[in-house]
Length: 353
Image (cartoon, rainbow, N blue to C red):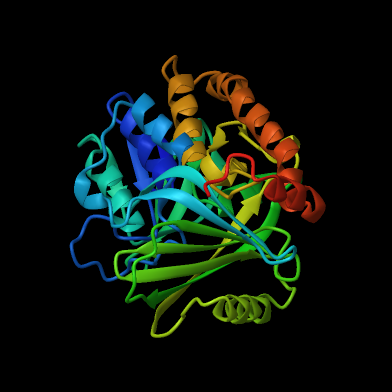
């Protein structure tokens, strides 16, 4: 019998387990193997691996310091903004930590309290209500196992199985498909590139240098010729002088884009959601690590007073996240409306010459 079962050991789930693992009996479940040096099953997380300033602030607030072996070259201090719709380009000063996302997730798991039970290579299947809580079922090493718990926490990202089972598609954030390919890169690129093109997507695309590789990614609407549009993007960028030869691998994942505050969903009864599963992710940049750390901190603080009434306390604290999502959505037109973006970029305000 556990006090709390956490589904998903990304930044949201791992940080929550770290903060409550000495107070509660916790089970942490994840489909990846984040402990073994040579895992048999480690699905690549489709992530650009950049720690934005908001995420840096949260790491500082949590009293953590990132080991240097998690960082990768080059460290980035500028964003090259390419507007293909308006044929404009600007360079803006921004500060990012460029990192290895797999190592980052492994590090968060490595600093968990020893009392946290971990089941990696495990797939959450479903749950049922029982007196005093829930019984969850999951697949581990091809066997179906079960565990009893008072509380279930969904930290399983976009397309969360747990959210889908309790929310019934009510106020689900808009879904996008993120496609990202890795290419060998023989030259150095000292900036993160953000690309806007309404022909490709009403969201954005990106290029990120990482050691000897170049990552090309795009957030695309599902069922709207996603692969074809990704290839068009690649062709357009090739005409601008980018080189996408010697592809190493392709990654893909669903991502949420909450365009309404009501699309943030904290949970119900003894079930809570954190991180992207709750709809906590930037609607303007798809940055999610800061929201994962913040929502897991709020939930941990809500559990400090005990399990009774924890969800109401969490919902109260999460009002700050909802306000932040509202502000990001109010700012989005300056980035995603072609006319407003054209005015902003032509002005040259805050750009680097």
